[in-house]
Image 1: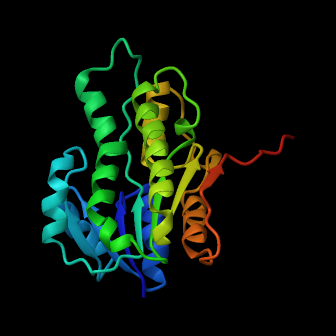
Image 2 (image 1 turned 180 degrees about the vertical axis):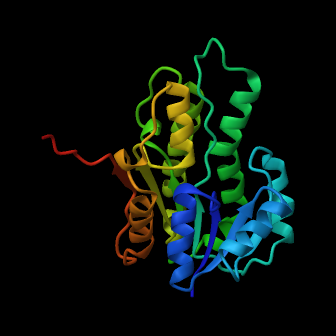
Length: 233
């Protein structure tokens, strides 16, 4: 049985990843923004543990880790949670920038720092579910992409710094995926939302688990998933 700390397990890609790991008997330590959310996660994933912390407030993470029932050795830290704030730079307020950067890069950096002593071993793995918006941006996506670009830099630097310990670092860049976040994107774009047109969250979860399960003689540094081709009639 392996131990995984996961953010964003309540919905979308994070829920799909947690479901796969839970079904095969791995131990889950799930970051929840409140005790109420933690109770909901306990119902979804019986036997799981929770770390109560608000990712918009990175300063809450140290107390959450200190108070959690974490083993001395963790097999994986999976950063799946994300915060989406869309709009032109001329209209995005300070709070949108603060929240986007806190959830998408500052909290992952802080949680990684706090858990590194438990991850520094040949089976340790830190995995970031990023976004293709962390590779290329567009109008109205400045705040979200800024956080994701920074998370890419965080992962790349961490890989270089910690490789000597045997710990692996992977970044997954999914394209548009059928999640509640994607529904919010369509609302912003004033378009009808059809989840069948986009990547299934479980498809991304499959890529995540494949990277985690790769034999120790190799490392998948980056995975990019794009929406598959659609046949035309």
